[in-house]
Amino acid sequence: MKADIEKLNGIAKQVRRDIVRMVHQCQSGHPGGSLGCTDYFVALYFHVMKHNSDFNMDGKGEDLFFLSNGHISPVWYSVLARSGYFGIEELATFRKLNSRVQGHPTTHEGLPGIRIASGSLGQGLSVAIGAALTKRLNNDNSLVFSLHGDGELQEGQIWEAAMYAPHKKVDNLISAIDLNGQQIDGPTDQVLSLGNLHAKWEAFGWDVMEMNGNDMEDVIRVLELAKTKAFKGKPIMILMHTTMGQGVDFMMGTHKWHGVAPNDEQLELALAQLQCSDGDY
Image 1 (tube, one colour):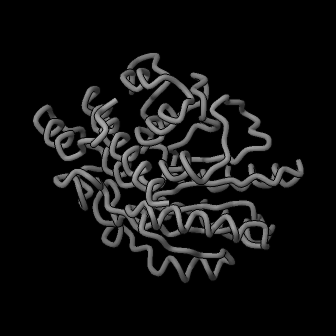
Image 2 (cartoon, rainbow, N blue to C red):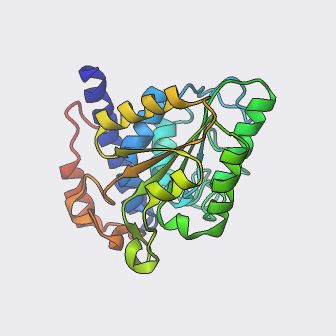
């Protein structure tokens, strides 16, 4: 297991290099949340999820993932490319005209791995519930995973979905919330406090877990434990504690890097902090 963790940490460092390069080259995008969620994405696609890079929209017989906070697309694109969904060289077209890797994930360009357009916050949990119910109707015992931002929880549709899933016993759903405490306008507790999220989700009828989203070993442990809790009558919610900008010291812990691109000098500083022991590729 130690060797696996070391390998996954190496992939995560490379993904973080992809993120800062992608956002820098177009001088647009959202590096902070992408860097903070990197360990979760790497764990999900390289260890936890049963998925197929030979992509089809139906996803029958495989686990599905839905990104609700679509502005952190750089981390998802990097992980999809590095797990074989499309060529790594396509990352260099991020946010360019006619590119398939736009600032927010969309479906009409036909990018493998993307099943919904996302980034209009608040909608992803409803979609994930629908996909989970579809799997149940099709006698498909695969899982559905989804990720949401903590600022996104200020959207009312989230709480409608939060009521619906336990009522319908959608127990093949494992959702996670990126709790970095930051959103575009500032700290979440200053913009609109979220209160005690553990107590809230439990009160709504979810099986609630917590993990350190920037510790690969803990991410693997909690996600694997969540899988053992599936199909037992309750949807699962993981409160994932992360640091915005994780891995790049001058980006860490502040909302100021939610949607700001590094300049040339900042890019070099970031890449120096994200050096890979097995080289860059």
